[in-house]
Image (tube, rainbow, N blue to C red):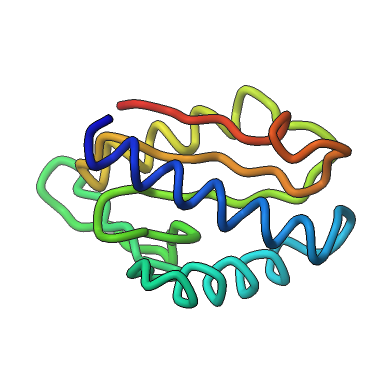
Length: 124
């Protein structure tokens, strides 16, 4: 198990604790704040609402494009609270990974009966 695998395992554990405490059906922003708190309780560094800079043919475009969480400067976590994850959610995370030059991301949908069904690990 490399460092990224170990970190994603810890992040999923923290997400499971948040889900256990709060359950499904809340706003994404509530889960984001709870997961930030849970990660910090577990001494896992996390930044939230990290700006993504887009370079398009030599110009920088920044139009308030932000990813939900960047954990330990290596794993991007995108949170959802939707009826079901769609292919566009996976593509969004893949684009964020490419733009941020990161290898691994987690897509976590808290609005599900079983949280493990709502977690997808995506590799760039």
